[in-house]
Length: 212
Image: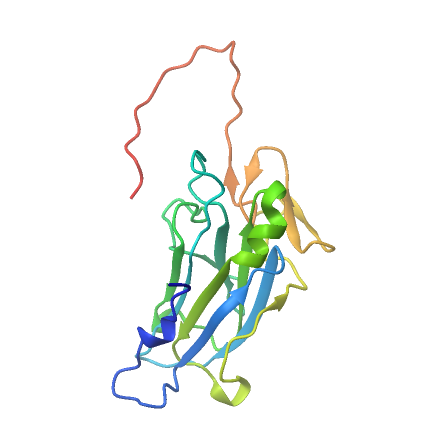
């Protein structure tokens, strides 16, 4: 029982050398923001798939939190286009699953270096314990430039923020490599706006069906 070895479950057709596949296994969330870079080539028929998976831990038997540790997968293309794990229609990060995936169609792949970012959010009072316990696995499948890559995926502490969405929605904290959002903005790129609540204003209740 432990972290899934994704490399055993994601193959590469009849190619026994897995030249389109990279695997990272038992990776510690040592920092709040980890990063690695891969190089993709342009092809007509091979999509790019990035998948992370991890086992969450339990804070307590009566905890109401969906996840003790929330990991977010974010991929940035050479042109700065941002892809978020599970590619939700509302543009937000995934907060209710321990599996996240990004798929980039072959026609949309840009030739060059792609940044793979992993963000982790854990409760401050359990931060040290959870960072020691929780590991994740990752697979990267697609038109990988093997001349510039190693056999395994290695993450290190990030050295840059991911792109902001909107010039005035926030700013990059270069020390933490995390974007700090302006008022009523949230998300890893400050891409989502929140509505301010005024209790004295007339209001109407809407029933919204759950997402997913």
